[in-house]
Amino acid sequence: MTILILAILIGLPVYGGLCLIQPTKACRRCGGWGSKPGRRRRSPRRHCARCDGTGRRFRVPARIAHRIRGAMRRHATLTARAAARAAEAGRAAAPRSETR
Image (cartoon, rainbow, N blue to C red; front, side, top):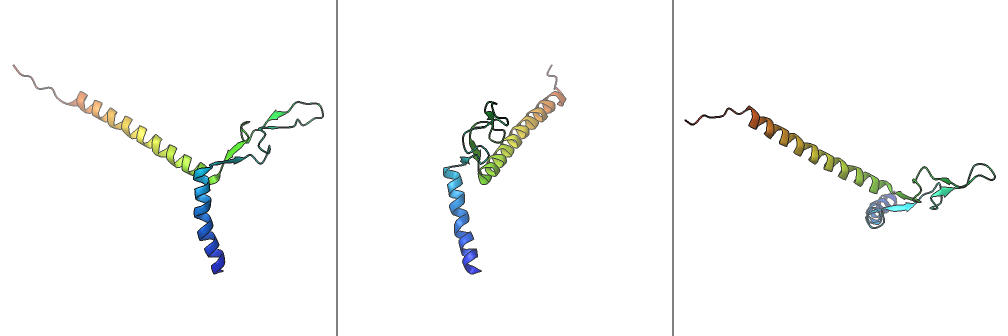
């Protein structure tokens, strides 16, 4: 049991490093070709729907990191927009002082 735990503790960082170095792998559905043979005998090859014809798929940790990064980027953009709207509304609502 301790050997299994040790193997997992060593394997996870190695796999994480591999995902940083090479985040994509060959698509298992089309074998990395990007297209599949037609369903009928004389039909042309068709586009692989899983990899969108690229022949590559992102590994799971790379997908998770990309989604987290995108969520943080969207959150920062929305926060900046909300702050700008609040500042604009604050300027419009502030009473103007008359100096005569």
